[in-house]
Image (cartoon, rainbow, N blue to C red):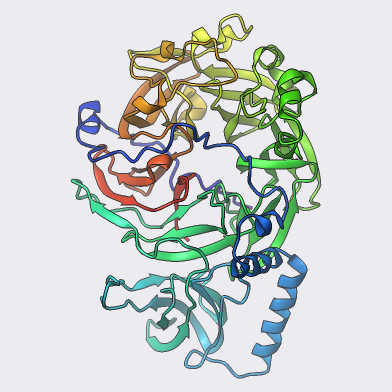
Length: 579
């Protein structure tokens, strides 16, 4: 089974990024910076759905509660199976061909802007489809046509079953099917499908600003992976023009990233306690519970296709509301947050604790202070990357450190740390610190760390690490540490933040060093946010979550296009996927 973690669209670093700092630092973050309030902590799962129904009781209208109940039912595998059986029965009772296909609008409830299509042909054909555009009218902008080859559509067949995505909301959509026979002859037919209005309050069209680069945008859909709304929660898909092309409802919290097992399905989180698998036709075929744990921030496949999930003990966040004063007084009895990694066996659904980071860094945990909100959020892991052979990269926001661990299923061992020598002084891990080469401020509060191997990594021990450097040095867990020691560019007063960075480091494991390869200055976001390499042209997508904006840059660090969107709090992450 070919597995894709879905954090980039081409992770090979062969050819590299020949950016110049002069080029990328000039003019790439023009315009006013929409800074969020200084008190927004941004990353914690606190206040999110601890169970399926909590959102339904949290300030929703009666209509929203009804929709939320429907969303909860969507992630019931038995109900999804029944829907598929009903579709099969209806299809079998008719005689559907390419000129009159069997079509249902979003029957599984997993994407408002999609439809299910099924038909038979007398000869083996490949299939593509095009959703017609819409002319500009009144205050509604023109919408371009949207074309795709559905899953399996590039293989000649006589039975065709697939999902059409990219429909225009609240619109009677015209869809054109092109069936191409093995002799190259094409046959064209059309059908119409009416879509409802969006279920959420997201924008149909983002504010789009063209940049100075003429490099084409990478293919794919911008996937908004969490807006932490107090209302209904969705994963949104937007095309390169900023037009919404998908609205995927989730029970609550966030879908932190998409994972692709290689069979046309995708796996994502749909609440703080559930991971779900949606197949190529839109059916929810698996839902895995996190058992005695609550997930947060990120997850990855291991070599066997099982899920490694960042987690806290279940009830960690709820416990904070019981007696905050007592929690502050007695740290030893507190349930710690965001310091565990669990494994979910996708075949059995079994959940096991893979690692407690408190066992690896006990002295660090012992010196941490309980935060003002009652959290003992002493390490705050916000990214996990599987490197193979029981090895992972972790991003720790609270310590502003990237951590490489080996043998996580045996005896977990720290291989290296990319962080401040001043912070780690006296920890016993001083010899694990990579040595920074060159003059640059260290990463501060980073997110969205991505491992980028090159073709010769196995022999040279060299590879790149891409991350979003929030450039914000602060941690309530370690109030006595002077985060200004990370470098002159690091912001320690939130209200004075001007820039964060998309950064690429080159790690040399043989020399035990790392150096700043290049960086792109972006609007400041003290928390959340993401960076991703996309496309064959090595474009970089950088989202500044609290500024509610994201930009795709070319390989020289010049902006191609910038997108702004409304959000109640922030954008958690934006990754681009070829869906």
